[in-house]
Amino acid sequence: MTGHNYAIVYGCPEPPNIPMIILGVSLSVVCIGVSLLAVWKALVSVHDRKEVARFEAERAKVKWQTGTNPLFKSSTSTFKNVTYKNTHRKDCTINHY
Image 1 (cartoon, rainbow, N blue to C red):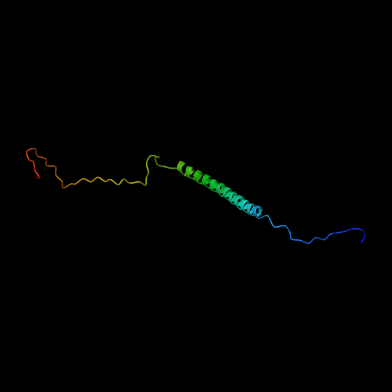
Image 2: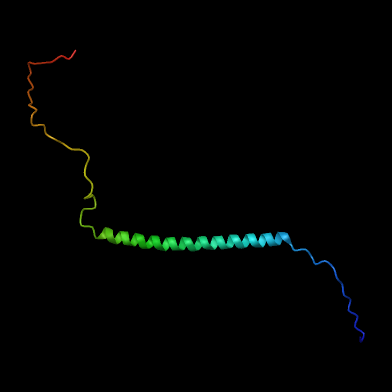
């Protein structure tokens, strides 16, 4: 050996920094979750805009008046009783008591 003294030191390695590992994993999970939510929101917004445009196009093609619905039928019906005779007499009163 030509004058170099290499000291070999064997010892325990430094322990890992546990709080930094937990912080890094937590932040990466949060960032991935937020980015997935942002992508999902963008896709839903694009789909909703297409759906609204399709609805507006169908609404512009309607052939009936916008104030009425051709599928709606009123639940109130009026019938005329042909066997009923209107016999109101002024001299006849009926007391139900």
